[in-house]
Amino acid sequence: MTKKKICALLCVVSLLLAVVSLCAAEEGKININIASVEELSKINGVGAKLAQRIIDYRSTNGLFTKTEDIMKVKGIGQKLFDANKDRIVVK
Image (tube, rainbow, N blue to C red; front, side, top):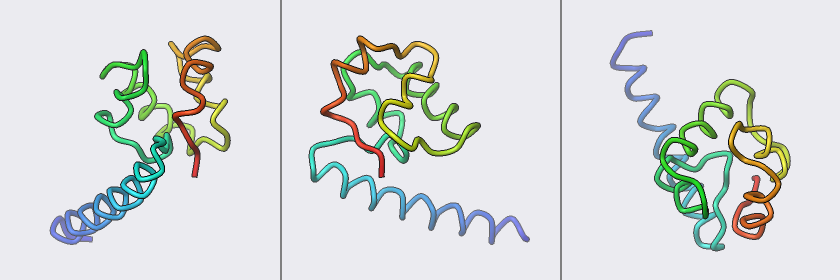
């Protein structure tokens, strides 16, 4: 596959993820399976570093199957989850 094709494919995937993310935002919840660092940083108690850790975890281990799985990410415990469980979603 050429670099141009890879770049085009990445652009299409990014666009699709943005559209899906907007759909989740319309519901007022953050889809932790596709959210960007910016979006994840809107979760109370999550800054850019922790947001990146969520994305890294997702990339390494696959998508979250339930919202509680976010607690598998280092730095996210029960207290942080409880404070945000009504603001996040897994789709």
